[in-house]
Length: 144
Image (cartoon, rainbow, N blue to C red; front, side):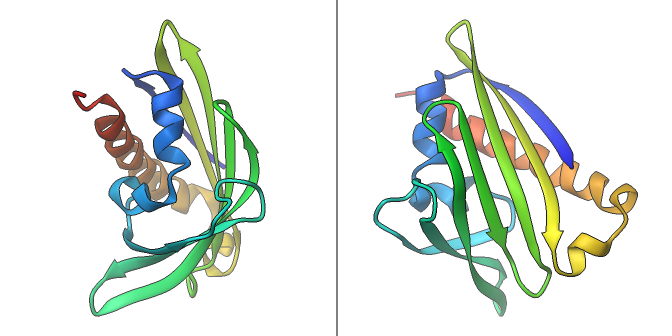
């Protein structure tokens, strides 16, 4: 499992408002190109958002499903991008003096990506998730 962390200069509630708004997914998740639909009830466990990954004409339609959700503290997702596989992603938030300390963990759990040795895939995931957290911070920190 890879782990990244970021101190976002915004309240935890602002960060979670973005994390739990399925329609913002493509704005901050590296690789997501569009959101096609978000189930009513998202981000409650068992609910999904439907996204596309890639750049036209090589676009894959798939989904992300909420596994666990604790408002303003924890969000765990099952991310699908077949044929590459499935991953599990966790976000853990802590208030740090009015700012949000966010930890993002990810691991491949199914499919071809899950059989790649950790030592080979970890640097790629770390770099991708660094940029994902940077984008999330830019959205949360924007002037109101």
